[in-house]
Image 1 (tube, helix red, strand yellow):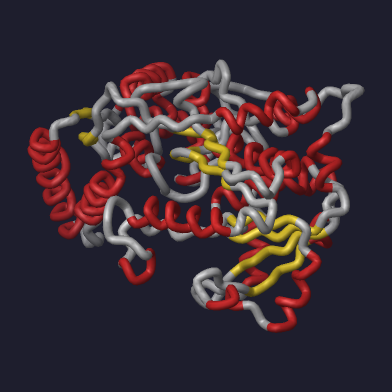
Image 2 (cartoon, rainbow, N blue to C red):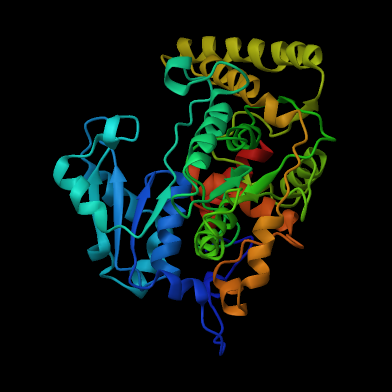
Length: 416
């Protein structure tokens, strides 16, 4: 048991009975769904959300590509073995019978599908296209751009392509901001991978990142991943309310800036509170005492990076080599510097997006749907979220336990 905060997590997934039906659940009953990007962070959550909250779905096609000589079937099994699928397995142990794995590759002509698979998926009713490359500096030839970050411009070009076909199909775009760990469902603070600011937060938690190139007064538009998954499913239902002949394709911005803004200074304040009140959250593998210096000056950042990262990194790597170990710190710091450089466009500016289309859905939803597909960030508790987020980094990325003995060990190391 987590000794610093014992919780009954079953309450988080409890939905009280109401007389109202779930319109969204009814919409998906009997449908065949196709999902790309199922092995990714958001793909995992959308699939879990569909299986748990829309059990009437007939079939789900998993579009999965072969990666590193791992067969697509094995990759599908890796997806459903994630801890977030525990509730689905408990509610419906035979849910795997609804899953059909389809070998594909979205970067190839005809999605890399065989002729037989192309014919098989023609019975699809709903498509969730979630697959994407996460390389922010991909080559122009692969990402069709060479300015800003290749990731964001590629997204923009893809949206323009989709816009051309919106008169022929009921198509919509869900556009989330900077996605971080889950808030409350299906489990708290679940995270997968080191994308976005997660690597930076983890680096500070482990005492590796000492200086960060960020203007503390800027407001990052961070969004919990479970809010994104709920918004994607709800927006799919909402598309039935839009006429294909309308001049504009529906775009749903999933952002926190309008309903629950938070500054980098606010996040650093939450970090200090978490660090002071729960020092046992520090990793067992922490290198130094966790702290971070925020500066908006590139010059100051480079100077501090030299003295707080590069020089200590060289010394530590030399010591590691003397002890017969492989050098580690400089490799980490090179990655950290690269990450801050690539992500600086998102960290150093304020982005404002309208979310009227998204919250127009909220007004149409029944109370039951608002409980099951809650994407609202009104009155969101960032302080509690950040505490859970720090715990999630420790549990799901560092694979460290939060039992009493382990936490005491990390606390003793922290004091030393």
